[in-house]
Structure formats: structure tokens, C-alpha cells
Length: 351
Image (cartoon, rainbow, N blue to C red; front, side):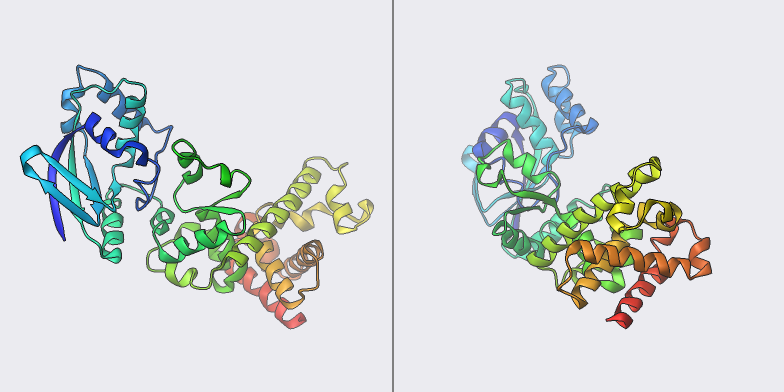
């Protein structure tokens, strides 16, 4: 492992990246955040001739990781291969947007650090630690996880675009031809993992609702996604979308008692329908997802709608028959590990 530290002119940096702006951040854990006040501040400094010379002092600089580096001290150049910017995506993209509009001041210089290393695990660790000095969502750190990378490739084959990095698809559309993905279903990795765990990992399903961020903790993520697959991710995504539409029906009925779409869906006569019995649906998306998945696992011949209706009836009856459940607010109840376990146990007994 070798490293170089230096200063580069911002215009020269953007020129050297050239058409690789869409791929240069492949090992970074997040991409450019368009509506960031910090990024607007970076642009303001870098386009104003009065502040441009201070850019070096205001900015933390950027870090690049590469497979190989060939340094030429005589002409102040260094040639890199297998390179990725792992810290400084906001800075580089802000400068690139200015350069595109020819408004990047020529006096902007930036601190640059280059690390030559091929060992993948160490590269990933360097990326993680460089991005852990300021608050970043835990889910960002799985972008380079080997399981997630393989999952993205597997999902491409099924017309799903798994966004390993936040806003990945939208970002890449700005810099490369993404037409082959234009009819793909875009799925953020955070949603994919939450819905997969909620559907298929029974002992973590309640956690998927009550503390989603904990699912991505570095100490737990490998265990949580060890059995993940493209097929399971797609099924949990399809089920969640359908469940969300049914919850919308319930909410419409809740707002307007004359609306009977939800009671019609359940096959209940409007005169016998009691809305309060189904109040758990307001926040019960993951609870229902877990229940439906378990029912379908035991009775694969059931349609999605049949599984959803059976789940709704089951959860309603379990809550109604338990005084402690009835006394809890729905928002708290649908995060309860005890309720998740009660529903799971009931399904196992029935099937």
C-alpha cells in the first residue's frame, strides 16, 4: 500500500476525470446530493474570484483509491488505474457542475490524497472510516457489500434496478446512457433490505418496523442479509406494494365513512363493518407483510389477495382477544415484537 498527498487545480481535476464522472464514485457510499446547502456553499466559494483562492483552506479535500499509480514528479503528474473517489463526491460534483457552465474559477485548488491498494476488504474499510466522521445513515455503508453488489447484478436480469447508492439511477442518468434501464423498476437498497427482512426474517421482522436503521448496523448486516436473493427481494417488493394499496383503501374509508372500498375488499357488508377493529392497518405495513409471507409459505396456492385478507382477519382476531394488545396505541402495537411473535405462532399452529 502506497500513498501520495498533493494539491491539484480544480479545473485540471475535472478535466482529468473527463467522461468518467458516472463511474469514478463506484466505491463511494453515497453520491451527489443536489439540494444540499453545503454543496451550494462549495459552489459559491469556487465561482467567486474573491473567495476562490481560499478554497484550499475551506475544503477537506478529496481521497482517491486506485489499483495502480505511476508518479512523474518531474512534470507534477500521476497516472491512475482502477480508480475511485471514496471521499469528496459532494466537492467534485459541485466543481464539475460549475465547470460545465464555465463558471469554475481558475484559482480554485484542492487538497488531494491518493491511496494505491488492491486488497478489497481494506479498500472498503478505508471508505467506511473516511465517511464516518460526519453523520451518515447506516444504510449507506452497505453499498460496497459483496452480497449487495451481487444482488444488484442478479436483479438487473429481472428488470429491477437496485440502487446501492442513494439516488444512483438519477445521478448516472446525468452522465451516461441509461436507456436500457428506463423501464426497470427502481428500488433503493434501504427499502429492499427493510422489506426483505420484514417479510422473511421472522426474528427481525418487528425490528424492521421499529428500528430500521439497526438492520444496517455493521455488526448485524451480514447476518440479516445472508439468505437474501433476487427472488425474495422482488416478492417482498410486490407484496409490500399491494399491501400499501390496501392500507390506502382503509384510510380512505377511515376519512369517509360512506366509502366502502375496504369493506368490499374484505367481503364485509357495510352495516357490519367496524372501522376501529382494523386501526392497526394505519401503521401495520411490515406486520402485514410478515404475516402474508408466512401464510403464503405454508399455503403457496393462495393468491396474494387471499393471503392479505387472511392476514388481516388473523391480526384483527389476535388483537381483539388480548387485553394488553387492545389497550396499546396502534402505532406502538405494530412495532411490538410480542404481536409479531403471536401472529407467527398462530400461523404455524394453523398450518
